[in-house]
Image 1: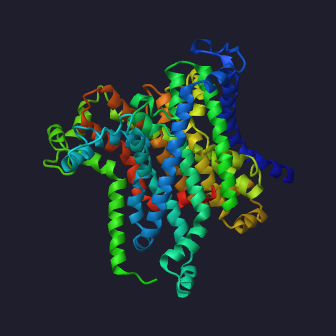
Image 2: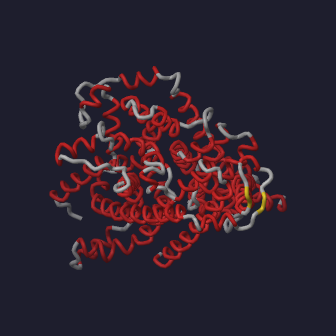
Image 3: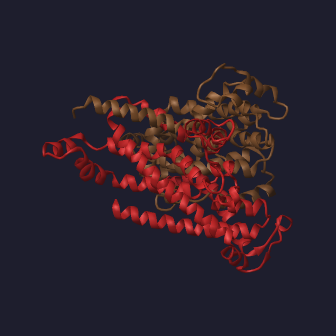
Length: 287
Length: 278
């Protein structure tokens, strides 16, 4: 009985572990082999080892670095904006949300929608003839920019990402803000501290770990962005909006260059790990 | 603290603006879906002259080339199976992690860190494996991937849920001679039900919203709603029928929308907890 019991916990984690092995370890092994091989759809079962050639090709590919740079810029701009907006809304609306909690449901809605569908909605909203945004811009300013051309696409895409995911930052930051006891704030108020001073010296320091985590989540999601950019511009806008995820997708499906695509994805994975470790370090220092 | 009525008014104004701006694409698409084709080109503004349900009826008329029920059915199946499977795998593992510290050092961090890994990296080898196993363009193949995608959140939520349960009840049952299986199904499961419910809800919503794997792994038989909706745009080329397109987009977003409006309290709390502790 005792001995059997000690084995049971291992039995309980077995299904999950087996599932992960099948769906993660096997693909990763395939990635590793194919990344050092020359392989096409016709030679899947007989890849020819060619050493590190694929990695060299990726590193020498200007498109790869361009896509990486785009994703990085996109992720930094979008996550910083989401954090600032979310923080402002969380703190400013806190008294209202405390009084009428269900109002949060309306603020949360955007993050419950599929990014791909939201992207498609913006194709309608920004359309130069039937779109509501160009319509009002023409009406009041007499002019409307081409939101998705090479010059404006970056700003448009960042704005769309920010509008959809600020609710996430708002939700998490609000729950951290609401978790701070009013006693602390009242004590500071009695000592003569104003609202801004309380925010700066009490609320923000207490919320700092949550702020770092929120930034972390938003950054990694924006860094690997695919859905909304793909349905809005694809690699269009003169290729200027190719994110790193879209670059790998296209290398695989359009160019049929499996070894190259896999090598690019492994470099992306390594870079993601570096970013992850960097952000975790940052988080630990502030937590 | 005392509330200044002017400040409260200002907060209500900011709230209204935020709701309007954040939900703007949804509001505009919803309004467009009730306009006739003629009105859409004549009146792109935010009001409707003559509301009509013609676009929703129009979806049914084009079922021979765009079968929305097919896509909806695929999404319900894949998202449902993906969410249930993730929960079934995570629940016993979460119990072992919390109460027996098995896998706490490797399994839990491995799964939660999966959240940070770009999905595209797995898409290529999984595509190739699926091709060999004849799982491409199957609902079950898509469901397996959706399960994988949702495991980090589901495991974090259920681990948090079980951690917050009092261990005394389980100890008392063990003294009474209950074995681990009985404890798991008769005691832990009922008590962890709120955590399990919210993980099912969130996993279903996220699975419904997934796009990348649907795009890569399905072509016809198992195409989910998000990808199907994008087909509608690419298939109609330059002349998108905006009225029907809007109605398609509204119907596609309806399930997650309604679920989150009903269960916002659960969802909000779980997401906040999952993010902070996960």
